[in-house]
Length: 201
Image (cartoon, rainbow, N blue to C red; front, top):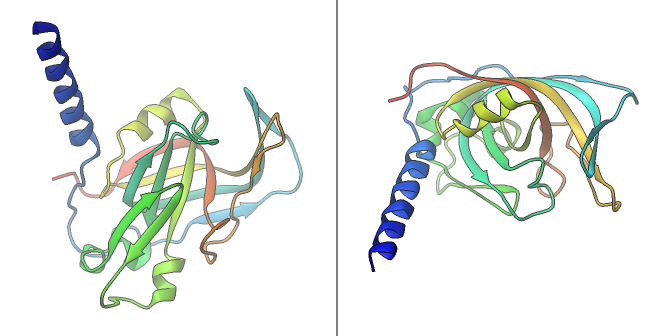
């Protein structure tokens, strides 16, 4: 009986810690990430090997964005190298006054948004936000990624990459911010990530 009580307390404590790590933070109103992502397309070049995966860099990529949502994965095809997806917004999609009127969620490697009354045009919502599959390139990037919470403003540098597994399975990155739906997500090899903007509340 005592064993089960201790186990329950451990599970509750771990659940509380995980919630605290990832619960939304609330930032000041106004545009918190005004610049569009910076992308420099690359030609064919060096590929990177990650265990059973091969990464082919398609573009240098850097951006500052507000984290709209995060979702962690353990069981799908990309989970061994990209355990976390971040839904990110920039421009007016980083403004609390806009985001308060939009409901945002993630599942199955997709990002979803809903609104009853558009605070900004639909195309601006679609072009100023994206779901990104995050591949940490090193231990520091992995550590920083673990601490990211919804509401944070983060900056990261890295590459957009295509992913291929030894058995032939592959996943291609989006190379534009103007697409939606299947194939519209960026796969980002993150070399450096840091929090920016106002402090958490």
